[in-house]
Length: 313
Image 1 (spheres, one colour):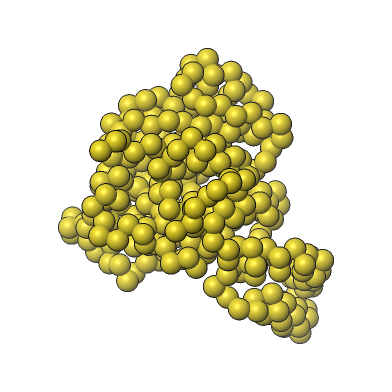
Image 2: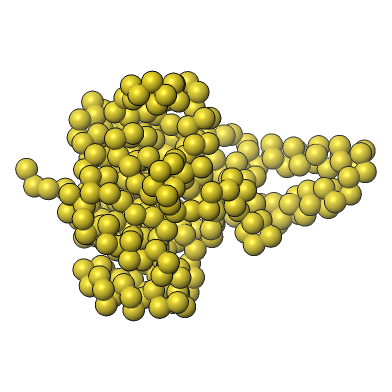
């Protein structure tokens, strides 16, 4: 049996702080991998460093900052056209261990129903390599029904656990996921695109599996409120509207906003009224776009990807 073709896809933007550790770790993987980098216009020398020190990397220089999702789509398209069996989406502020991918591949190969697998995720450690990443800690705690916290405490973990969400710092995607769900929604520039993707994943009947035997590092900020919404828009309502699992979601969210505005008017919470009205106005302006995307995200196949002859299962 031929070894699977695994492509690591990394979007970079001023990644010098982590570049050496990140790309060196890929060379040590027990399972051979190919790496594609999409650079979003770094200004700290990231491009030269990668190309000079890691010439094996297939390097794509974007003419502009495309954000996380659009840049990943470029990498996914390149990997698919080069015959990828698996797509490993990985943050620039991250690295893996020697057996990280091998353990994920073992779970996939031994799973009784491969078609239901949408994303395989390793366990995210923080930059110290001694503690769970704070966000993984949160996601596990929200999944009470899988009893993973209990198993971790008693040291009786299973090979994998179904989990409702995991952020895209380390996503291991089988080819069948790309062929059914497609790529990232270009409506999102940075933050929120992984939530929207997971909604589509679930709509298409696929699951996220968290695999305790595979460990990786995400050296991200250990703060649950790390997203600065003065720099990035809060698109949680737009994400709900585009969720293909919901019917008539646009009108439902408009009604909910109007009710919130009314309640805040009664309590004279003028700042909140202003924010809510601004959001309401935005949704009205973007109605056609949101409704078009709501239809598109439910489609099966090369959604948001420029790949011809993509064969959805």
